[in-house]
Image (cartoon, rainbow over all chains, first blue to last red; front, side):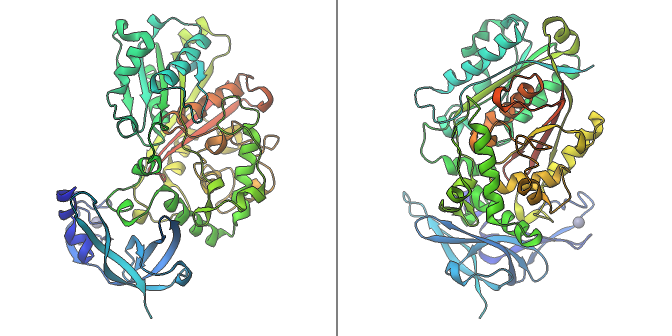
Length: 122
Length: 383
Ligand SMILES: [Zn+2]
C-alpha cells in the first residue's frame, strides 16, 4: 500500500493533472496517453485551477456523514473529491476551493493518507 | 452459422447460508445440462463469469475448480474464467457465443457464479468495480457514484425519488412469481421512500442486494441444436462496448455511452429496431440505472425514461415488460452470475416457460453493465 500511495502523492497533494498540447484537453486523474489523440498527443503535467463548482453531490452515511462531490474546475476539468463541510451547507453549483486534508490512516502501521478536499468559497 | 441456447439452469439467488461456492455452481450447471438433454462428454469448453472469488473467498483459479467439481476433470476441456465486474456473466456468455460462432466448438457451457455471504465487507468488494485510486480513495462507493449520476439526471430531466421507487415496486412485484428470486414479496412506494438513504437520493430499497447465486446456459451450433432440441432460442446478436472507468472522465453522466454503443451494434447485427424488443432484462443495480437504460437502449427518447415507468409501459402487462424476473433489485444480484441469469430469464420467456411471469414475446433483450457503465453487453435473442 505504501509505494502505491507515494507514487501518487504529487497528484493528490498538489492537484497536478495533465494537459494534451495537441488537442488542448485537461485530464484529472493524470494520464500518460491522451484518449483523443493517443500516440499523436503531447502530454505535459500542469497545475490545475484550485477553484471550481459542484456539478453533483451525495452524502454517504458512514461513521459520520461524508459529502462526495463531482466538481468542475475553472478550466472545465472534472474531479471527484470530498467536500469538507456539513451536508446541509452544500448546494448544486456552489463555488468551492481546494484544501489539503487528511483522508484516513492504516491501523496497523500508522500511515496517514492526505489528499485534496474542497471547501465552500465564502 | 447461428448460435442457439439449448439449456438453462439457475440456483436460487439470495443468502444461501447452507451452500458453498461449489454447491451453488453445481446446482445451476446440472439443471442446465439436464435441460439441454446432453451428456457431459459432449461439452467442448466452459466459460465462467466470476467477479471476485479472490476477495470473497480467497480462491482464484476458479474455472478449473468449477470444471473439476462439476465432474468434467476427466474430460480435460478448456475452462476459462472471465471478469468484468458485475457484467462478468454476460462477458463470459459472449466468449462462449464467439467460440461457437468461430466454428471451433459445437457445444459450450456459459456460466456465472458468486458466493458473497461468507464475508462481511461485501460492499467494499463490490465497489472494486469502480476506480480504486481516483474514486474510492475519496470515499466513494458504488452507491454514491450512482447517486451522483441520479442527481445529474434528475436535475436535467425532472424525475423524482417517487419515480425511482416505482422501479423497485415493479421489480419486487414481478419477483413474487419467480421461484429463484432473493425477495419474493411486494413492496410499496411508501416502503421505498421511507427506507434510509445509502447515498442521497438513493435509498436501501433503490439498491439491488448483494446475493449468492449461480446460473448456467448450454450453447450449441444451430446444427447440433436442431438435432437435440425442440425449442432452441437463437442468439441474434451479442455485442459489447466499454467506456471510461471513472465518472469524472465521462462527458455526459445522464447516459451510459457503452450501453448506447453496444445496443446499436446489436440492433444492427440482429436486423431489428429497439421497437421490436418484446421483453427485456436490464441492469437495475440501482433504480436510476433502469431508467437511464430505457433511454440509452432507445425504448424512449432521452430524458423520458420516467414516463415509461409512470405509465406502466415496462410493467408485466405493458408494451415492453422489463425485468420480468424481478431484476437485480428483487431476483437478486450475484455479481458474476447475474449476466447469465438475465439471459436465462429471456430464454424462459421465449420458450414459454416463465410460469406466472409469462409474457407474449418473440424477441428478447438482455443488458448487463459492469460497475457504473465502463462495460456493457447487449444480447438479442429470438425464439
Ligand atoms: Zn489530445
